Structures are given as C-alpha cells and as structure tokens.
Image (cartoon, rainbow, N blue to C red; front, side, top):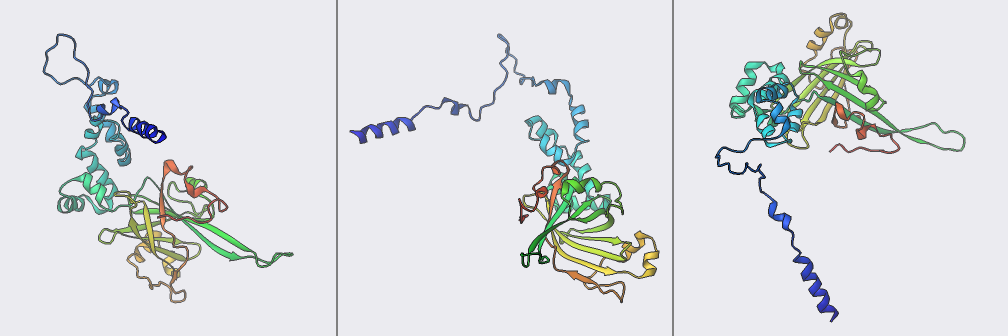
Length: 317
C-alpha cells in the first residue's frame, strides 16, 4: 500500500500544471483601442524611445566605447539594431589600429573580414586601451636565521604593469605594490619619480605578437619584452603571454641622444642582441607570468589586490 501511494504521489508531482510555460516565445504588444481597425504596427511606448529620436540615439552611441556599445546592445532589440551601425565600429577600428593608417585598415577589412568593421573588431587581435595589463609573479627566498628559527622561507610577490595607448606608446612599471595603489600613477606620460617609464611598442598581426621597448635612463639599461596576444573568450584579448624579457646596456653616446632616437635604434631586436659590448644582453627566465587585463572600473575590486596570505598563487588561465 505504501508503494502504491508513493508512486501515485510521484505521478501527481510530475504532472503539475505550469501555465506560465505557454508564455515563452510570445511577443506582448499593446492592445489597440476598442473599435480601431488600423493595420499599422503598434507604436513603441517606451518612455526613453519617445524622448530620444534615432538621431540623438546615434549621437550618444558614437561617443561610447566599443565595450559600452556591447552593453547597450543587451538593453533591448532596438538598441541592438542601433549598435550594429557600421559607422560606430569603423570609428572603433580606426582608433584602435591608428598606427597602421586608414588605407591599411581599409584593405584589411575588405580582404580578411568581408567589409564588416564589427567582425574585424571581434576577430582581429588587438591591444586593449581601457585598462591595465598586470603580471603577478612570486618566488621563494631564503631568509636569515634568527634566534631559534632556522632557514626561514619568504614568499616574495611583485607585479609588472603595462598600460598601452593607441599611438604606439605604453607605460611600464615594476612594483611590489598592488594594483589599486599603482593605477593612479599609470596616467599621463609617466613619472620617473614614481618609477613609471614610457616606451614604444610594435604589433605584428601575423603572429599576434607585441614587441615593447622601454629605457631606464638612470640605469643605462634597455628593457625589451616580447608578448603574444591571447583571448579567454572570443574578442576578449585579455591576456598577454610573455615570450621573452631581455635587458641590455647602451653606450654613452646613445644615452646622450634623444629618448625617441634610442628607442628607434633598438626596435626590431633579436633575443641575443646587445648595444654595449661591455654589458651583454641578458634573457630573463623568471617573472614570466602572463599579463592579465583589468578594466579601469575593476581596478579597486580585482582579485589581484588580494594580499599574499589570501592568494599565495594565481593562475591567469
């Protein structure tokens, strides 16, 4: 008897009526006035669409960032169609790849992306300028024995920060301080007082490769970093895998020249290339953790701000 009762209860449970399921996929439209036989489509009664005309909506969208357009496209169907305007994505592409010039970008979108600027924005590897790339590195260091403690071991944590600009420039800083403390220094042209150094970079689309070069004037040292762009999701471009970090000395004559001339002289480098016979190039094998992109609006809340005792390792993915 108990078995039959439970089986009947199970059947009743699985046959529970769910009338709201019949509403899925239905489009709810305003009910026309009684006696109206107009065949015109119903008018969108959303207040924001009554206030903003299509021209004003376009003027707002054209001033938004590409990622802001992606967020706006999720609001409603009308905004989704409005954000597909090719003019918006053409502006985004020409701004992002301005170092290649207008003509080269036009040839690229026609030959590789079927004339679609939006598809070019999503598929073509690029550097992101709306945030900071952060590389979190840790290593173990043996401390000095004190009192009864023998061979203490310390976990050392430090960061590499890079902020790129569309003009081909970037800011670079190595610091033990966390992201929210350093982000305020990565604005403007950089400050030698805060150990923020400016440099230049080149982008190779064939290999998704970035070559960045900066100069430490006081140390008479050139730092060259070779990286490869990677995305965790399509179009994200939120990782930079470090392929090589090379430091080399430069001669006194080169230091006396303008910084731009020095950076131009060391561009297109080879890994074992050196500019001072007395100070050979050194290829570093440590501190090669991938760069993780953090947008400006997530600087304060990023997990990279956690102290060592709460995050003793970090896997960027």
